[in-house]
Length: 240
Image (cartoon, rainbow, N blue to C red; front, top):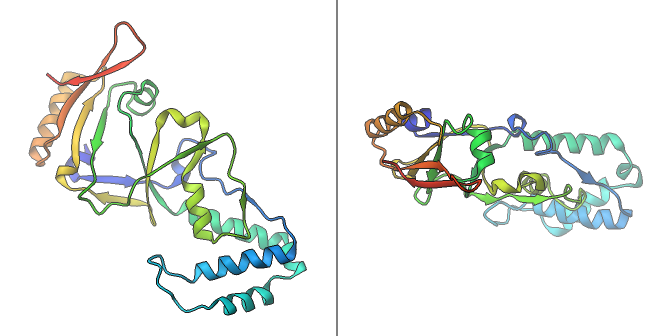
């Protein structure tokens, strides 16, 4: 009802998600010192470029000097330094706000897990006219990415981890919107294109949702999820 009444979507912190494997920082820090220095020069240089690709001031020579002074044999085996960086990246990752979306509206497991056993609804959005972050498809894998920690900036590592999940979740076909902080974002009235009522939802609840949409200037198409009588399948039909 808050989505309907306030036109707000909540971008949650990854720590509140139901998959404990989601969002874990897993990095590798192997390598010879010359390889590590070369990788760190690239990372330091990249960190000093703005997102819109405008040059911010550091030169390649300055990045090289910085790395030469900092990266030593002692530094690359210092577990406290490595541990501190992993903790810093994990903290940055956990501070992001994530809105989990799906391309599917008829998956049995998702209706069971996320709508109180088919008693809730599925919202269908189209965000073309909104200022919300662009949705990016999640990559499903059997293992964590083998990320060489020396080569990438903290932000690049966070971005890779944010969009990878265990292959066990592939049925969700998840797309994520990510913003820098946890909290709510508003959407425009015409972004809500449809509402699909769960197969076990009461008619009273359906009529209440329709009424609240009218009160708030929302005009979605109303659909009905129906259990197929022959197959383990959900059919989406017009609500009558």
